[in-house]
Image 1: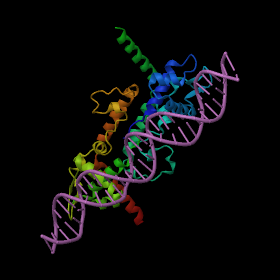
Image 2: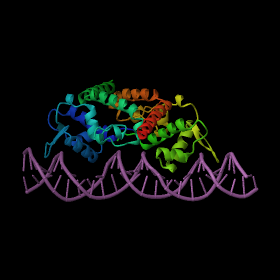
Image 3: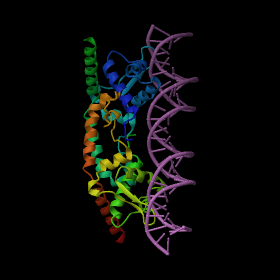
Image 4: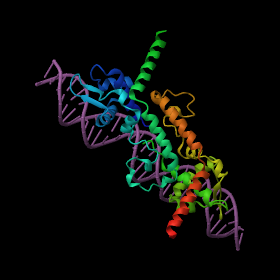
Length: 149
Length: 149
DNA sequence: CATATTCTCGACTAACTTTGTCGAGTATAG
DNA sequence: CTATACTCGACAAAGTTAGTCGAGAATATG
């Protein structure tokens, strides 16, 4: 269906959550899961992936949890999504690793999709987790304001 | 994995095939399947979908087959793909039919993806089946030329 | 009319991906 | 030592993709 899966959704929201609520010590998986409405045991896998790819650092034991491995300003949405979803290439023959130039039958449409893919990557690179976190903070505040009326 | 399925591939190639080899009478499913290397019984489903959506017209009986229902110049790639794959919206909340504004949790990334989706649709609208057929004809001719050396 | 040809339609299936759950193990603070 | 938290891999349910198959319908031809 050509759609982003919940991995990309959940995982990016976890990063945003860490950007907002991290800062004073690690954030526990259970907290993220509760706030973001993500099944905790599923979130486990996503955090593991983000850890493997250097987006998140975790510590065990009491008081442990997860935190961003580097500043949210330096994490772009593209790389986060690629970590979670794998390549976003709409065609296998556009994959970066496809150096062997696998003779994909789709190559007839390749020229159209190559431009679309490039443009998509460009735009996703221009957005950082910090940007998304800022938007989310605003959203939370305006919600708060509405309720307090 | 955010990737176009073989439906979009096979189906569009069937349309291109009809644009190239149609013209003097209907083209049989078996011919398309052979030329485009598509399982014939699977192609059946794709042609049915394209027929339902007015891209293809078919006639039964001996000498029957399939032909484009309107000029290839007036068929854009976007509509063909949407017929075959369903909506290409990367997020459910960007779906055109989502007028009830389903409160998708992904909405945090929505502003990023909305622009990407619009741009994608714009580009896919600008390409017609006739354009793709022209490219394919060139490809076939240069192949021919290579072999004849 | 009989027959061969070609499309039509729905049921069924195999493989794969997504979306989880669970339990045993590991590290660490106190 | 013990409670707390993360880690890792096996497993499973549900949905999608990619088909296969067979009975039936329309039509050209003789």
